[in-house]
Every structure is written in C-alpha cells, then in structure tokens.
Picture 1 (cartoon, rainbow, N blue to C red):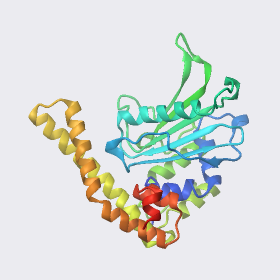
Picture 2: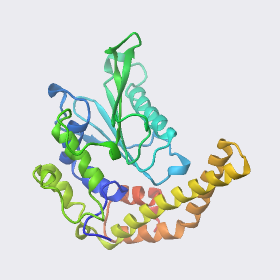
Picture 3: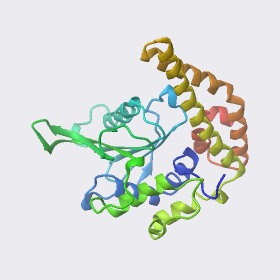
Length: 300
C-alpha cells in the first residue's frame, strides 16, 4: 500500500466528503451545472434508503446524499465500473427524492430541485470524447431551451477528463483530476492541486497515515470486493459466450456468484466491523464499509 489511498474507495470518499461538509460544498459547486447565484452555501446529510442496491455492485457504489437550506437535494454516487443499471439507479434515486418531498395534502409549489451526480471511473460513451454529460428535461424540438425544472442528472467519465482545458471551469477539472489521479501509485501530487486549499485538505485525508488499522482493513476489503466482482463478471460473460447462452442468463449467473461469495465473507466483514467499533468509529460509517445493518453492528 502506498503513501496515498485512492479517494474513489468507499472509506476514503466518505472521510473526505461525508465527514467534511465544506469539502463536499466546494466539490458540488465546482462540478454541478450551478450558476453563480445557485451556489451551495450549506448542507445537511440525509439517509439514502430509497436508492436500491444493484446485486452485482453491492460494495462498489459509494453514495452521499445531502440537502441545503434552500431545500435542494444532492445525490452523489461514485461508481468504479460502468453498468447500464447504474444510470437507471441514479435516475430512480433522484426521482424518488423529488417525489418524497411532499407530504400528503401538500401542494406542488413545495417541490425543490434534485440533482444526481454520478462519478464514473470508467467510460460508457466510447464513440465520443465528451466526458461531462448533463441531462435535463427539455422540449424535444427546442433542446437548448430547458422548460421543465426539477430533476438534473450529471455523469462524469473520469478516464476522459482532461488535464488542462480552457473550456471548463478550472476548479471543476482540478477536483475531478484529484479523484482520477490520487491513489496508491502516487508519489508526488501536482502543485496545481495543492494550490487549492479545499483540494489540498482532501489530499491530506488520502494519506495512509490518517487511517487506523481497521479502516485500512476496510479499504483493502473494498478493493478486494471490486476485484472479485470484476473477475466473476468477466468469467461469466466468457462462459456464456462459449456456451451460447443469452446475455440475461450470463448476468444472472454473475450476480448469483457475487452474492454467494459475499455470503462467504460474512465473518471477514464482522471482524472488520468489530475493529472499527473498537476504534470508536460512527455506526453509519461501519455500515457503509461492511454492508452490515445497525442492529448487527450493535450486537457485536
């Protein structure tokens, strides 16, 4: 393990953006399509129960949900590998958050905008150099004119994010470079990243020395899960092609194998949870890193 940890992993991503709201505010203001008068000035973290898990990606999606004082909701998800259902998951989550704003009998004037941001450590549009994908509801024959406000989706393909560009906001590109470039193979950090106070602080939270042994165990467990899921998926696809099976059956078999392997890792996750609990870490963080419920953790 190197000097720095990868900020795309669950435990590092959450230490940076869940434990330090001012860093999340800086990140969202830079990356989301918000005008000067729409900038976020404060936020409160929210529970994320309404977004369903994708069986084949139980531990490889990292998500944060928050709301500002204007009532706007922001959902951020970090995805290691592309899968079409990830886009549908984020759409479902933003739509559900929009609907859930109204209590019975309230009028639609109470509805506030919801933003869904998907950060992808992969590509899904191989035929284009576009890396920033902004979706909103527009009139079909006048696509440049947004006419229905409320839901906004943004997907960012990190591998295609440029190092230098004059066409994008500088802070947007620097934050995305931080996510893309920092990792265990990093020896030196670009001075351009260090010169931004918020990004510099985020970099400090990627240093291995900032983590306890139990947190490092959870970090390693995350990447092990990513590797297992990728291997099983690739193996199953190869077997399915060789046997001439339908794509749907291949995916089902891959997900079944992942779930079976996950069950075999229960004891390992319990051990990590015990260590994290002994370190006095928050129950919410332990839940996110081990996929155990609060009741299961409290019984340890």
